[in-house]
Image: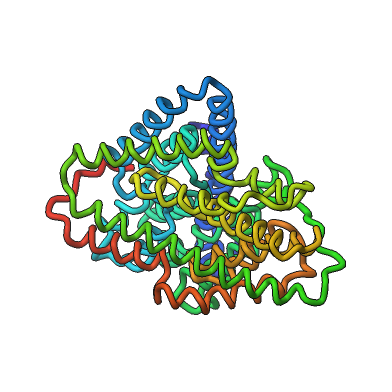
Length: 456
């Protein structure tokens, strides 16, 4: 404690030497963003490593006698669902809709509601529940959860500021946290910035551009310090493309965009049906049925049908096995529908990318495309499917671009995103996250007696 006080006194001494009051105020406003970004990077790294251990555990379980999968998957799903239901109901699902809802509710009048969407408890349950689902073979990702985790960290740092500290917009703090979380999860700094601008903010970026840029840089650098300057996927070969590949990109964008929007629509429909039933036994029965379906998918179609889907993306982009069987994209679409509607924690970013990769892989085979053209069509499918879910074409294109460092195909990827965004409206005018945001706000506003939340 004495060491802490000594460091604090020394820092205060240096700070007091600054004569310019404006610089002092700007520095005090920047420090919370820097501290929160550092913590976000560290937690994102820890989450990445735990998630990788869970994925390895799932692969090990899959190698055991197959009948064990029919036991392990239901048990893991049940534990993951129970953790969310008992300790943090708003930790379920992706996490991005919760962050968007928190941004909308970030006023003194709704502080208690925001606390239920973003807290330390949310962080713990989010990590534990999503990893438990993955261990059981669930089709889920860590990217959406990382965004809610980062929003929770930034929110907590903001709440810990003393009364005399210069006031910082709670809304801007949460938005900046979400951008930092996405940047740390995917190692995509530009993707984090574009995501904040396209998906989250209704405020002009000039009001918090310095904060968001510095937060993305710090969180990304911390993640790189522990994980290395990695690419989420790698360097697929997309050189020497044919002149007609633009046509293939457009066709795949239409198919994948509609498929992504239909997947979202199915998830929302099942969630509405489940919400009508308050019978606890029916809820458990549905959960166990979902787990058994996932386990059966793994047994019949192989391990490629389970997990986040990163192995599938790596196979079709970096090996000679460019073309998966025709039903694999269907399984990669059905998997997230089943997993997400269980009520456990877990994201749809990575599963959406893998489903899009599967669609691009199958259609490129039907088109008899060359290996390099196939790689581009697979990337286009990833962008289009994710756009069908999020309705954020530029975020999707920039994310895939940064994951692969293939700047020569930026126009192809942007075309895929724009086409997918246009055709997705035919299925639903609103994005998956927008629907869930309104649902979370409705649940918070209309619940009769909110459960007591311990200080976190």
